[in-house]
Length: 280
Image (tube, rainbow, N blue to C red; front, side, top):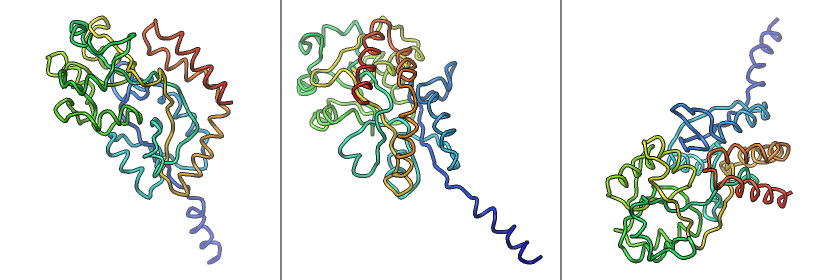
């Protein structure tokens, strides 16, 4: 009887699962926490499938801002972020999955009424951001702690301090759009689909803003899942990659394309299809 009771006492402990903590933030059109399209983002659709495909873990979802997410990923924890840009710096302490989705690269958003201010820096439809920053003529709004890619991050680090307006907070882009509307910043750096969504939430019509690609950047970039560089995190990435290989990439591409302006959708879908075929 004593042996039986002992066995019952240790059985739950033997069955305990490790808890994988998913770090999420409000990042339309990838993740949407509030509003009429709550839970309809691209990663919102992917994450339940990943969780269902990894029953060997208990899963916890934590809403955090960018700075807190990066801090947790750098600690000896078992955490994963479902939407990250890759960079050499981050690879030193984050283990990355294979590419999960393609997104349109960062660009500059300006009010159409301010086009003349940017005209000296536009060539073949692209903005020379290095020249714009060096001129000090216009304030550029950026989100604190965000990785914009190696090339753009390098330009921002070299920019005169008074050329940037850096915004912290959970609704940084929405606040920057309001500042732009008031003329306190002239241009914003960000993703076209995200800016378009946030502008709609702020009551800013599509035709009020103009979006410019940035000279020196590619048209598209990849989004990844990143986990803490620990034994558990590295094993989780192996398992996540197995799940991603079994998923049709077209579904996520179509989910992302639905957030783009009509003129951009066909080109995006064609480029995303070609990219993932090449990856295979």
